[in-house]
Length: 77
Image (cartoon, rainbow, N blue to C red; front, side, top):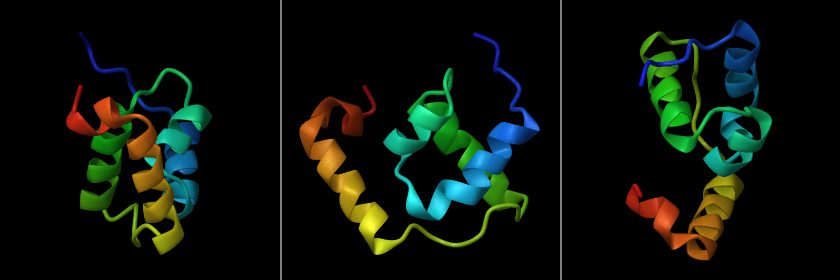
């Protein structure tokens, strides 16, 4: 399957919300993008120094809670 190009507006959503939103929450803001594509884009943005900072403690905690509710999502399935 060919990789779908990212629009500037989608990159802005990631850059502006990365620190305070989980991947699951970002999926709801980015229709047509799954967790794998979002994670890949985040990694590319970090390499290009377009994305700085880390997830907040609250965001990390919410992410763990979301994985507990949907354990199959945390296993790469």
